[in-house]
Image 1 (cartoon, rainbow, N blue to C red):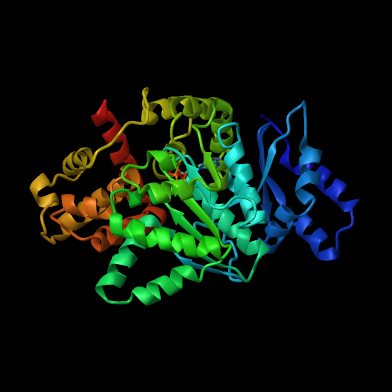
Image 2 (cartoon, helix red, strand yellow; image 1 turned 180 degrees about the vertical axis):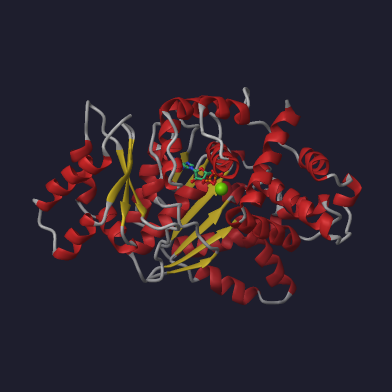
Length: 436
Ligand code: ADP
Ligand code: MG
């Protein structure tokens, strides 16, 4: 949709200047601009993190929404920081446990019929912790936004309660820390730590399946925090009653509050998501390219993102213009989400890097083996639901820290090194072709 960004922003500024804003705020408006505009979404660049936060929390958002409304369309308003890397300021509060992804905030979460209820519930939890829904349990298939949504709650909680101590942890890390605490006789410290949280967030709680000791420990942590009136937030790949080999007393507690599900996004929601994800990377695709991607990928939002990255890297690295033909060429005619196994990954990596399966799975530390092996481990983490231990088992019985180290390292390279990124996206395409 053709629009003149400058004129539109001038109109918005005009409307804003009629309201009561102070000089600093007016200054922010002067230095903001419209980054992207369609009938579905409007992306606005804010000059500083402070300005962005102000826009998100104030009436600015609704004023803009009103000003850009057209032909019966009410685009969703999203703000991005006018810098290469958006940094969310959480220095006022504490999040212990794991690092959060600074993009996983409510403003970047696109709402549609598939997630409206879960999103509204998450907002309610962020506004009224331990009052609205406790525990808050969210489940879905992979790649549909659980982690994004529960991290968004963390950011919002901290914004509202700067003194809160939020502990955010993956279930795997919780279990590993627990085992380490048992072995090193530091169970008291472990318990003191997890019981001191104002809010405990555990991602992928289904990994408790089959782990009796960890279940026992988590049961007591849960009871302690719950009785102290602290908020507990959990995500899982299935409904509590469907988590295999989970003690009944835990399953029933998980249902005490609210169990919300994220479904697969509708076509319209996928369109919106693609537009925003592209805009966050300062890119805009034509309507037909957006529609093509949205049609082809309908089961997993992480894959939607992967295909955007893929298109963009062909554009920046190979100078190819992003046309419908290019999209068809590299995303394939039949891009459906399929179940990928560790064996598939090993075989494709072995082909792509010309290393033998035996070497890949050996303990040899040759440089030419280490890199493909680390990429393979990264892909196992990214594309399968196996635990760190299980993945380690496929690579010559390595322990979970080795797998974790590989994952972190490749994740970093993926962000910083375009060649690695392209290689990984290429391997993913090969994996899809391999599965056909
Ligand atoms: P899950 O934890 O369910 O496997 P994630 O939260 O990791 O899924 O989401 C996968 C990717 O899809 C992330 O990059 C996330 O930002 C994106 N995503 C998921 N749902 C949405 C949404 N509604 N709006 C925008 N991005 C989304
Ligand atoms: Mg997740």
